[in-house]
Length: 497
Image (tube, rainbow, N blue to C red; front, side, top):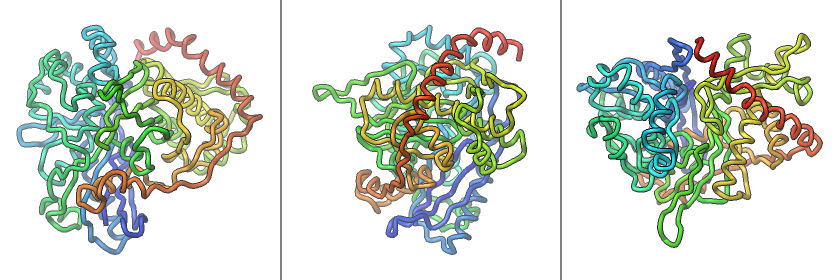
């Protein structure tokens, strides 16, 4: 079997994948908390990640009734910062992608470099929660901790360190830090110098399918596996789902509703035989896990997290919320939700954006709130898709993935809002499978990314309803008008937090 470990924002998932039958043998997940010591903070404990990984892998092995793992791959949440001391131990909590404390430093970075120059280097403007912004914040507000660090790692790389004892990252994950030159595939000396940081702080960046180490005896004992299993570098979560869903060349796009929401469009940035990237400050252009391929990413911060907030608030479950949302008419009886619970990226790039229910009355109940959240997230994804296609060109297929796509009502809302047919990925654990496929490439099970991506499987197509789309067109206009009207209010309220 191939083991894929997906370190998400809400939980870690362990997927045991059989390349012969092209089936998941078993999977398991284990949740962990996000800590919010202040309203603009989002942190996680690396020990929680590792303990959850051990529990998930052991549970998956128990469910499979076998432990013959040939190789291990990883993927995970992007952008975050974990500092290591000289003994390769984490220093305090990790600051994850949803953290918004570095809003001021983000603006200052753009002013220092210039938006066009910065984007040409990194494929993106910096955003609050990116590694570059968090490190810039630490330079100003927590310099003592930063100076004690000997290495900085992205989240999934912490798990690989625990598995192998080796410090490294991969090109796809590094490219999403705002500190990486996406054309030459190396850490940007210009940005590192400007931030007055030592180059030694940044780990080697390997190709995603490269073997980065082998399972140590200590890690093997904890997981219930054999010592010496090869562990590949892995990749960021979005390239992982893209590999699993066959998105390794232009012509297709995916829409993922996980904790955040992502629009993923592969591109080959070749012009007259040389590499040339087109960029847009509202989007990100990063390196794919597939060598020689880049991708355009439109990202919103609180997609599934918005529904999770409602679930936790009412102490209920997702199935109940989906059923109640399905019983409410389109438009939720005049209720619109702005999904800016953690600020927003595409298209606003505003750490001080704030969420809200607009149009709330005494007639609205929990089902209305749930439907408004689903519609608000769909509107946000609509904005991201439109901008992505404007930069990367049209596509002939849109694949849906992530936990949100498992909800029939949410998937239909998304199709009606976008007015495009959506083909559901049959891979319920697409990120974990993508990580497993990378392990298979590294171990020689697959010849290359193309042969691994051939395992992709698609299911039903959700067609848009023309009448509902016509209704949503007007509601979408109302949605788009709200942020410009409320932006100043959001910023003033953020100062009071």
